[in-house]
Length: 345
Length: 269
Image 1 (cartoon, rainbow over the protein chains, first blue to last red):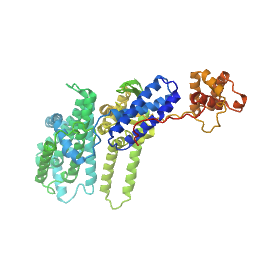
Image 2: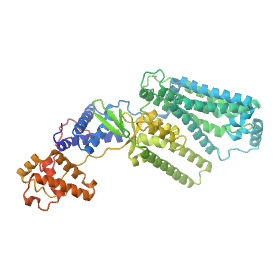
Image 3: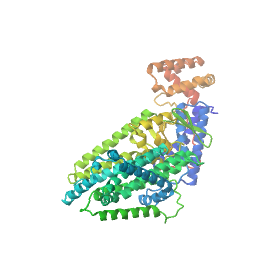
Image 4: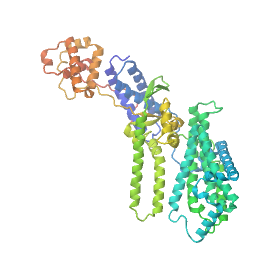
């Protein structure tokens, strides 16, 4: 019981001010590890403030003082009770070469689901194009693709043979627009995981429908070399990147739903967040590469760039991607304490 | 953690002490977002103007820089600032709000990242309607990104500790020298009335002047009726000055309140 509220405030003020000074230092700067004595001191001051808060409350203390001490206790609580690894330095090379591929492999089933949704959409899009000829305008994602494939191929090849560059003085801007647009689409796919995965399924299926329809359109018209040369250099990276976005979305959805899990949703989400961050980082890096290749390589056709060269380039990229995702980080020690949660990155 | 009412979240510590965190309302969050959008737009316009001043840079590259700059700022602005400033952006700082872990812990980077990566869903179909609807329906004012990241947005409340009534700017306490009368005043004074007088003096600046004069007059009259001090010690004292003297006698024994030195083992600089 506080017999004299103001004497109590005067007695405690120095301890509260000291606690606040410690908290300001630790909140505003990259905190260095505390010594045992400093830890004991912080803990002592936290307990003293918590005790003071309880006494102030039970004696209808000055509301301003209660709010102040309450704020101190809340801040100190975070410092005292949170157990986590110290902040690791941001290491982008390690993130891309180790953390991302490992996270990809840990959630490979989610990637397969993502790929399955896209393939189902592609099959639907292809079948709709072949069996419902009137659906072509609705299936094509861009107005420029409504042109008959043979006509487009002839037009673009002849234009480029004359030395006309379709992206003269626009390549950088075009690459930038492709990158940012594709990353936005991939982020939206990831974010749709919060709809318990339903939005991810819809986006991946729709993406597959347009992709399947375009490929079928060109194959049906006898333009297999053109469509492979056009899509493969960037598509072998871009499409898997969107699938990784879907994979991250499914990881998020699985953590939210928690099917057959005995852990709390909070715990599941804490584990999933680090994994999603790794997948998002890898996805973004892949789409940056895909944007550059699409602007500087994919839009140039025979005779400027022979289809054989473009298809080979796409195949090499695909092999490199598979090697990266399958082997990346496997040589490093597997018991990395940061890997599962990644919270401190 | 308990939601006490629409604007407060209560957290119980392991020591059994509870503290409350005041949630930020949708209006302040929307205003903070508007400020942040304004800041991002202003930065992009500045970059555009600066790039325009460099004639050697091709138009193609200028466009690319602007497109990528806009995108990186749009996505990275909130992530970078919330991480660096403990949950605040410029807009949030101006509005006095910040993002925090829903359990009262410090934010982790993955929390900041996820809550911002989920903005596209929250902003569907336009103007954050989806996120706003979820926020208003939930008990903790969380948009979808907050739910996934386990974060809440709080009002900052760390108000400074109110100063005890001092004697700054006043003459010495003319009534305290009458020790016997001062002792009788301490004995007779009703604790509740003393408390009211103390709080009234602390909050004098927040009161409308007419109401303040009336309140101090009534309180001073109450204390005057308890003990009659010699006329020379109260002559020319206003009701407020009289109350200062009374409060100082009751709470401070007529001398400035001394802060005792704590005998604690270690000091952290």
